[in-house]
Length: 462
Image 1 (cartoon, rainbow, N blue to C red):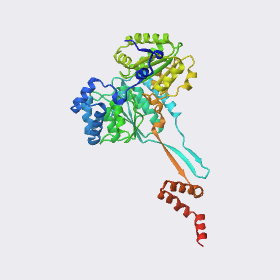
Image 2: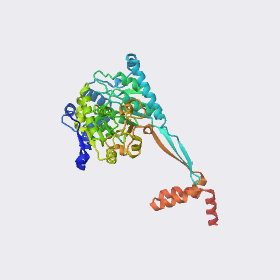
Image 3: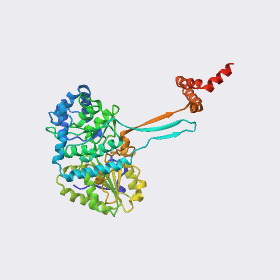
Image 4: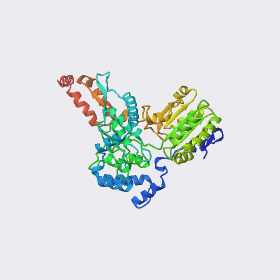
């Protein structure tokens, strides 16, 4: 395999756009084994969105019974409702078998994440308006949220920290971690420890679309939540999309992606390692390099080959790079930055001689990593800012998960009799313009009841 290199001077704009265009979530490739299991489950082959719709409907209608049925048929678990949630005994056992260094690493990451997110906390505000009324905004934490934590081929311990810590910093009363178990209902012990260290109140050993549906609508055993956040496979994300409106969601997360902007000062080995760090996530992950240096492009491509061969299990990364890996040699940095802004990638690394000069021009990115010693992987684990980020170009309008995702903004309005008298007539006139008579009357009955207005009305009658 050779990582594809294109020269923008030799590539038609429409071809370049095609090479960088990612499919919509509904069009993402699904593994043949998953397609087979879906066909067996429903008696016919179904696209993921239709399969998700049926799963959600079944859970909404049959509650615990449907969740247990899907756990058996999809996850291979015989799981009665009494065992949906992890017990304290299981969590204690995870700590007993854990290496102290692993627990220490989790705690260090947790502390950095907590510190970064505490800096995001909002303060209620109040302002007195010219007419004398008082306006304000309160930040009220949600009562119960759920965090989806992948636990399959890669048990994402870091995601448990990234999803739970901000919710707890925000003041959420109850946080439920939902992570899929396998076989006899076992969950990776490190996920149990990370969830507990982050502050999770309960751990649900069910993931997938059936877990999302249960958390959205509630069952006899699983309580409904106010919001569901976190990554997951295409079925988890489509389920989040399906239940949005019943509950809040953070975003529809697609496969991971990284965009590196690098010049001749960048070590090719660093660039290649960072491209591979995202390619190994998923066969649909994207790894892109933009440069103006053709020599660097070829050096990185060669280094990717060398490092790929050294991976213990290179097939996922290899497939990802073949499908979505790309190096573009741009005419100049104006073109490269414009292309980066169009891509609006999840992770953007600036391995440039003058990264600070480029940063203000980079308008659309989920997170930015500056310099050769700030690899995206540090953001995944210990840097402190959140690694749950917008993907597939949505960084044009969406942001990384933060404390703001777990609070509601409530406006507060307070008029005294005097301030109401000063502005009531203006409100009544606007209601008249809109033709909303009852709106106008809601103002006028108060104006008529004001002492000075009542006296004035009496004088006019006399």
